[in-house]
Structures are given as structure tokens and as C-alpha cells.
Amino acid sequence: MLAVKKIRECFPIYKKHPRLVYLDSAATSLKPQPVLDKMNEYYGEYGVNIHRGVYELSFKATDEYDLAREKVARFINARTEEVVFTSNVTDALNKLALMYAKENIKAGDVVLTSELEHHSSLLPWMKICEEKKAGLRYIPLSEEGRITTENFKKALTDKVKVVALTYVSNVMGYRTPLEEIIPLAHENGSVVIVDAAQAVQHFRVDVKALDCDFLAFSGHKMLGPTGIGVLYGKKRHLKKLQPVFYGGDMNEDVYPDRVEIKEIPYCFEAGTPPIAEAIGLGRAIDFLEEIGLKNIEAHCRELYDYALAKLSGIEGFTLYNKNADIPIIALNIDGVHPHDAATCFEQDKVCIRSGHHCAQLVSRFLNCVGSLRASIYLYNDREDIDMFVGALVKTIELFRKLDGGQ
Amino acid sequence: MNLENLYRQVILDHYKNPRNKGLKGYPKVRIKNPSCGDDITVEAKVSEGLIEEINHEGSGCSICCSSASVLSETLGGKTTAKAEELIQKFYSMIKGEDEGDEELEEALVYQGVSQFPARIKCATLPWKALERLLKGDDDE
Ligand SMILES: Cc1ncc(COP(=O)(O)O)c(C=O)c1O
Image (cartoon, rainbow over all chains, first blue to last red; front, side, top):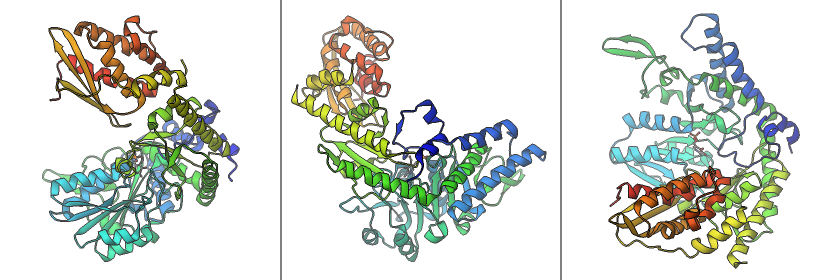
């Protein structure tokens, strides 16, 4: 177990809310002080624009921004020029879909995805397929709700040009067997786009080893600020893409009738980027590395196992994912709408998510109107789990009593 | 009011046994709350400034669904002017701005929702639908 007391000292939100039971890190993580300090330092000490001035402050800002990109690159084992800053995963995946589809998707082609996708991985392709008269196909999920290699093989045809998949489901916490899927996709001539929004903060993602073509994640789920995301793309792919946004900073030379754009990744970063946020993300990565992803993984696993053991003795609810790979617990209290339940949890200051979690096809698959989701991260401890389980029991009892009409 | 009492009154009565549920084909407005899946349609039969009848249909959490049922009983039979006034009173009560007007009758139980800001939207959804309906919207 990590020394949670010490870790929490780094997260100022616990000073303001000492009794906070935060189990919604899959939506966004809390932010440690060093990240806030680093961003403040930018605003307070060298808060000017990048790439534009030749004066010292601008040089310093540019330097820090570039350094953040290097940190991201090292974090996922990419080259720096393969790291494009965006504002979040949604931005990254939409931009990529637009850029990639332009030249590479035509009528009759197929984009293969899954019902586990977050809307930001699914909907850009849904719209593109609609427009281009291409097919959108889903890998059938296993009974448990997983994407399996076997089912992937069944769904893979020579029409499949793009495979767009989540690395980890944000509702079920299942890890997609991309290590097996990606080589098969490549043999088939398809490119693979990975939504790693729920992956990078939990285990080491090595884009070279994985051999994915594109991969995206958001800073705010990995202790970084909101407003910054990353699009990774293999260099040879990125070099072939045409930007969708034009403007300042992304061009080299402008003539009355044409523009010569900068090289990758700068050509994809039109306008003033989220400078403080990028620098903050760099610091968040340092923070994660200081604690160690392996240690975080082990800590979360231990808490998850502890939670599942506690839950196993309780009746009156349905657990949807008893074998999650990432510490996410998805459940519903039988006969109780998730929003009604979540308000009960709120009374005990237990913050969990309720609803569709921006992945409505998962709710459809589970045949529910939404679900309750508790997600665990490095600042959680056993007490948080106790509070969560306690609130669950209380809620089950409350609604039982109401049902009984007493 | 604590949560238990709120749910007790609301669920026992109107969530489990909704009044005026089922549409009959009058002008209607449908509103959804996509983040949680509340999806309510409210219809009203209005003639010469009088709301003769309110019906509703849909699905969602107990606060939203029961609120549609309570709305149909509280505002059915009122004049449109009165209904518009009471809708505004319902909003200010639920935001915690006041204790709520006696005329809100049964809808007064929703005063407790003001302590749960995240649920205000659930409670007001059917009222928003009727408000739009009275302004002349019709989804048909
Ligand atoms: C799997 C997954 N993909 C994409 C997203 C979208 O992230 P963002 O809202 O930061 O763009 C999320 C988070 O909400 C997610 O969990």
C-alpha cells in the first residue's frame, strides 16, 4: 500500500474537505500541489506566449512547453515529434478522425469499434461513416462485456480500414487485449486508434511495444490540469495528415495563394496552445513517475480486491464487472434508479458517478438505465472503501424500508 | 427534511403509483436530461385559459417521475396564468430561495430537494416541459 496520508498532503482539496471520500477519479483525478505550483510559476514568472517572441521570457516559456512534450514522449515511449498537444481526448480523437478520414475513408469502407467506447471514441466515427457512406461495425462483446481477440477476429474483414478501440473501458474497467488485436489489424491493413484515457494513469503504456498507430489521452485524469490532452501518432502517419485547423503558429510561410505548414507536431497545434496546462501535465507525469506507476497499480489493485471482498457479503445490488482489470466498480442497487442512489451516497460525502458515464452503449448492453460507478486511485485508502460500502448498505436498507412501506 | 422523508413521501406515493400517466394526444413537450437518462413528456389540454387536464409519460429517477405526477395533480384544473405563477414559485422554492407557497400543495415536499443541488434538474424537468407547453411549444 502507498502511504496515503503522505500522498494526501500533496492534494490540497483534502485540506478544504478533510472528510472527502473521492471515488470518481475515472471522471477526473484530483490535482496535486506541485502541478498547481508549476502552473502558477508559469503564470507568475514567465507567463508569455511561446514560439513568438525572441525575448528571454518567451524563450523560457517555449522551453518549458517543449520540455513538457519531451516528458509526455518519454512517458509513453514516443518520439517528441509524435506528440501533439490537444485540449483533451475528445479533441484529439475528433481531430484525428477528421484528418484521417479525409484521405483514407471512402464509401463501403468499414470502421470497426465496440460498444464499450466512450462517446468521444465512437461518435466522431459514427458521423464520418454517415457522411462517407462507410460502415460502422461493432465487435460483439463477450458475455462478460469484454472485447476479446476471438470476437475481434470474427468482426475483422478486408473492408475494415480503421479500428477505433478503448484501451480500458471507463464503465467496466476491462482492459482490451490490444497486444493481440493490433498485430491482427495490421496484417489486415487496418490502422488502430487507441483511446487510452483510462489507461495511462494506471499502467505503463508503451506505444512502441504496443505498436498502435494513434493513441490519445487527457491530462486531467492523470493528476494534470483540465484543458490539455495528447494525440500520439506514428511519425509516418502524422506526416501524411493534413491539419483541420489553420491559423497562427502552425505555418512556416504564407503567400497570397498558399501556405507552407510547419513540420509535425507543430502543424497540428494552431493558435496559442494551453501552455500552462501542458507544463502542468509535464509536472503531473513527474509526480506519477516519482511515486511509480507500478506502485500505483499495486495500491489500486489491493484496494479493489478489498472492496470486492467486502461487497461479496452484501445482497440487494448487481455488480456488473466483478473481474475488472482497472479499479472500477460498476453496479446498481436493485430496483433503485442510479441517481436516487447517488444522492444517498452524497449524504455521506461519498462521491461516485451515476448515469451513463458518456458511454450509453454500455448501459444498453447491460440493459440498465445507467449505473453507479466507483473508481479508485492513488489517494484512496481502505477507509474510503469502508465508507463506500457503508453507504451502499445504508442505501439498500433505506430503499428496502421504503418499499416495505414502513 | 432529510433524504429518507423526502424519498418516503415522493416514492411511496407518486413514483410507485403515478397519477395521470399515459398520453392522450394533446399538445405535448418532451424534455430529456441526457446525463442521467430522465426522459419526460408532458401534455396538457388547455381551453380558454384553463388547463383541463395534464398527463405525462416517460422514465427516469424517482424525483423526476414523481414530480411529473405531482405536477399533473397540482396544476391540472388551474388557469394558465395561475399555473405559470406556480411554476415560478416551484422554481424559487426548489432553489432554496423561500419555503414555498401554500398553493403549491403537494409539490411542497420538493422543498427538500433544495439541499441536493444536483437533483434540482430532476425535480424541475416536468415543470420546464409544462412551462414550454404553456408558452405555445408543441413537439408534435
Ligand atoms: C475512456 C474515455 N475516453 C474518453 C474520455 C473523454 O475524455 P475528455 O472528456 O477528457 O475528452 C473519457 C473520460 O471522460 C474516457 O473515460
